[in-house]
Image (cartoon, rainbow, N blue to C red):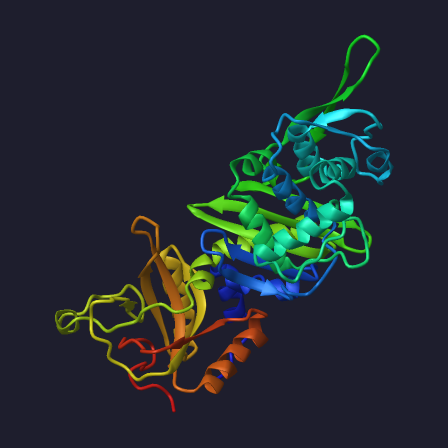
Length: 411
């Protein structure tokens, strides 16, 4: 079974975003991950457990320890000589100055000030080394066990590493803190350093601007943390919310940070139902429905999931998902394209969780009895489109009618 020419491929490209973009092929990042922020489920990943330098995404963990310390946000911390000697980016603080923890956090998370991170580390942990130990222990406590930290800023150092998965776990935890959420969502602010004078304390006001470009040009951006060093290249971890769905994105080693980040997020939102729900419930229609089936608009009717009906199919089969849509018309257009090429294809209708009754329409090929057979079909799809379709194992397959005959699966 082979696709017949460029016309079919063009039709698929026009219908479904799944055919236009493949993350592992089209992103420059060495490692990346998409996570469902509500459940912690990994929706998509590439080399998510590869240990890499995290650059300034490290500062998310620095902020967590500062926010959870016994010190108050308005407490002033002293600036040491060591803090002023750290390389940029920084506030260019001077020894002997003081600055509040709150202002240090804004400088840390918006303008990625390295000197602010050292002031926090020394003020909370006593020394940078002790604070780094606290960071590693906290990360491991959160489940980020593939990370090790030796400094609070993320400048390149031996044995300072993390992973895309660990950074997503850390950021997900951080976003549960209202103060952290407020800070990373802030575009521009100002902080104040204090210098002792002979008669009165002198204040210096410093403007800080968030490095996270998504806040300016990406719908639903909640916040995030950027990072860059020569060794790490461009890095980012952040969160975006749309239509009640919040995704956490984590990328390491990118050459096109904002292009990678936006494409991965759009892919996640466009295909959220498929990525988030790999094991939907299938069942046949009720007796009454079979006696008087609904008329479908396309060449194949819609197969509806119903948990309260008796399943009627063989066990341990597979289907291939080639599209998932909010609009029924788009699903039926894709169904028609596959049907005309001789595929066994159907559309499944399912209600989305926590969506207020919203429905998704999943275009699926099959069912297939053997995994190898399903894999061969997936390879055909990939060869023609570059897109990796999704194979779902099914404990029970639906009794539906399509362009082929799903009730009699191929042997």
